[in-house]
Length: 112
Length: 115
Image 1 (cartoon, each protein chain N blue to C red):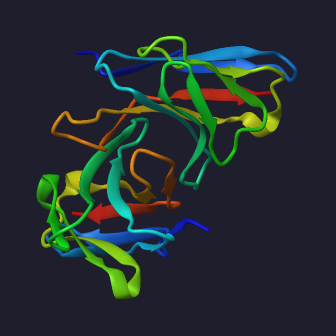
Image 2 (image 1 turned 45 degrees about the horizontal axis):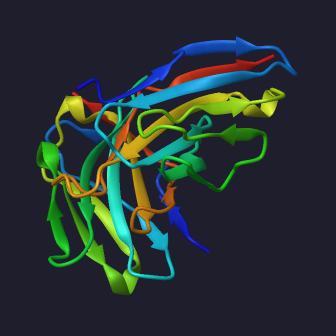
């Protein structure tokens, strides 16, 4: 069965510190992987996506993610966090234009 | 472009009432989706559509119905509202071959409470 696991419900980091959000997926075929960010009361905005090719993908706002097939992981990273990065982050896996499965999200708090 | 729009933004229903959540997109996207987001949970797919006249069930379709008579509109119908349907509902669409292939564009959401 398809599923996405985000093990960390909540993470707190200091501004300027590095960040890594974990995502593990279970999917029977080659996955299409996404990271979205959601600010309070807002819809979801795409940060980055992976379909194929280079396993390190760059996204908006200085985020990057690395696809590791052997670990079924797609972790999100940022070298230096800004206060404006505080939000909810969702990892998702999807078939090509078919159903999408979302993780339960990781809430990020940034301490000044 | 307005993108994906949803109405209403907020709604309170009584148990057993019915309502339609409206979703429209002006990007000529063929693929549209309805999700619900419960507190502390990710998004669960309710229904999706790959084009006008074509719909399919997602993970949690029970208690909902959809129709897709036009490319632009994808309304979600609740026939007999139940407290378990209290949630935030998001509509999304995907454009194919637009250079942003497979990026889901999300609406702002409809917050529904059933009492």
